[in-house]
Image 1 (cartoon, rainbow, N blue to C red):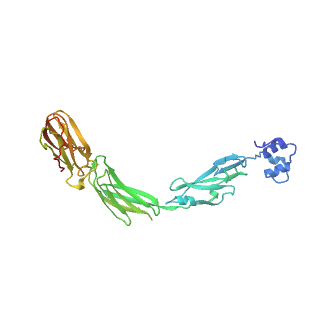
Image 2: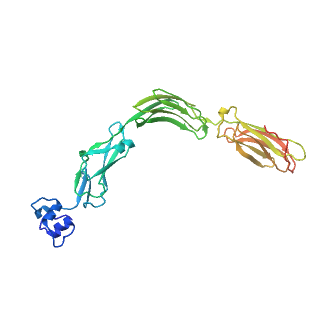
Image 3: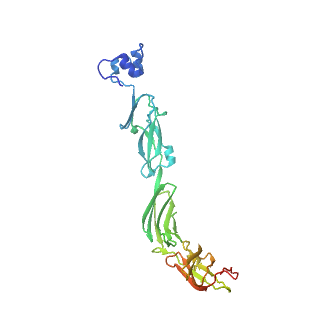
Length: 352
């Protein structure tokens, strides 16, 4: 508690308690109190009116902290800075930022980025404790070194299938990229073609047999740069291509038993049209009402499969090649009779 600002003062109860933290027993000296409090001779008790042994540290007249000299909990105070116009702080820049003068020796600092072009100086004491004296710090009194790196912007104007303008801002010497794209969950998208103008610009189109199609432009930046990119791609999403299906059905062999069996094959007219999302299987439909799919779904143009179904009874069965494509679910079919109740393993089978 501070010494009163007026009225009678007690050498022990007021001055000793505030300066030394106790009443110092029977041995107390006004001169020792004045020396500790920083007063000059001649020694007078009136000098102590309003005196407090706590220290106060403020920064820019706003942030303020008060505590006992050397006590813990001071922490840190901060002020923000911005890089010069058109520049920003890299991680290396942040590590090199410094306060060249104006900061009392009782304090230290560190700097960290708060954004590409902004940073924050943290002011603290070496041990994080309160200093021995009060300070009114002003960041305007510091000579602040804020090394920074130029920021450059790549601006791309798109025309053709993809239109609009995009930009990317990066540090000097790094690569900026700007792109346009579209996606489809059900259709095959074919390659975009692209062309760009301007030194050092790389332009690529992408999207063959994918659900993502687009174009991108990139450039290593050592100055602001603008370019135009023309693009060409299908005007709308394209359905995945429907493959061709083929069924070869029995009867094969002879005797008292005849089993439901079939060869199937799926293929595309051209391998350039193969779509990995399309697959097919063999489906049996019996006159008894039984319908079953056999075997794993296969990729067109990659597999020919033989399927055989054993079932007692007689009648006619049909075989279909089924695709998961919504525009070509049945690719081919054939019918054949079957009879008998015993099972025979056919040996006269050859693949397509």
